[in-house]
Length: 462
Ligand code: UD1
Ligand code: CA
Image (cartoon, rainbow, N blue to C red):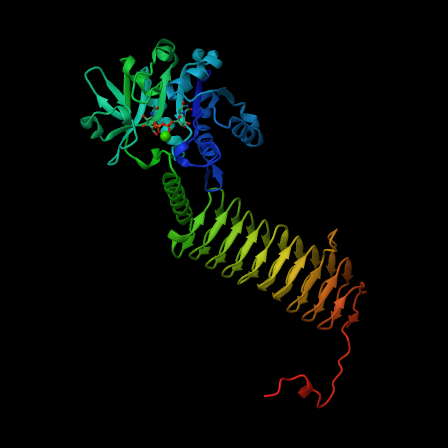
């Protein structure tokens, strides 16, 4: 049997004035993504049941949203209607149906708002299944604080949705409210979409008035109020962020991740952590970070888009970005791994060490106060305290190569480009400007001059 055809229309033309941001509401940031990404993720589930078309109504700064679609969702073929003036949610839907009239030939039309990012796929299942014998359904929920939502006012013929600004004192007390998620048989919209008016206190064409016009309609009450949280101001955006974070922690915990105090830990949706890993307080895990089994992440650590392999220990206050930490390695405290830092197995990067675009192979150590940039360090090398790769000449970056089993004494610099071949030894305090062949020794520091009894001429007299 061919799938039924359905269009989901996402209303996203509003400026989101109450958010007080420069970007359009659809692009408000939420846990590493944009609001609109959540809407698109939830509605993809509908593709299993329907031959689905995704439509958007855009207005304020539509080019920005369009280019977000172009970069992330090119394959989805999103239909975009333009609403020049934001004359209300009903007007927004009218704009879509006028610009894509073929939508009314589909079987069903779902309408949702871009500002309800916590709506999950299971709600879409409920919506679709419950509308079988109705012409239109709206999902509602009960709340102790109905302020701002359309109230569901039940009458003899069905129900009406009464907007905040139009509520009487008695209606304001109604606790059942409209979620902003609806499904319509297309014939119902064909019949009523052009009958909306703006005779209300906001002088807007309300989509919700569609429920005042027909009879075979219903409000489907869903038990969970949190899922419908609407993002109208920054307090609600923060609340949504906390809710998403809590549910991510819960999911990871049920997979065997140990949290010392998850209230202070922030983990974005695409992060993955394996069993037996311990996450201490005040840890931030962002982007596509993957953490393997039995890793320990100490307090104050920030990790972005990085891979941490099994059994690694990331000590307190380290900052790791687009990097790889090999199995059983130690990093920190206070270490910084910048993009393309690749640490092999059982390596050690100690306190106040910065590594950028460099490979540190198996078993090597950079234990204290060093900068390693544009370098390749072989296996089992020991890099002493205070080492610096002088990689930048003011115009170009140059590479330093250090072979396997080298020993670099403390306070050395390599003036790149330079190569120190395997099994070499560099004496402390050396500035290496020329490459060294395998097994060689270099010392490059000025000779010490000691003059007996001369100190007093430099010391202040007591
Ligand atoms: C809307 C509902 C309300 C419901 C609440 C749920 C209406 C009239 N009211 O109120 O019953 O309880 O959502 O969160 O629908 N938009 C446009 N064009 C416009 C106006 C709005 O595209 O001309 C878009 C906005 O970008 C937003 C969505 O529609 O994504 C909802 O608009 P908003 O102003 O947030 O409506 P609410 O007051 O929250
Ligand atoms: Ca809203």
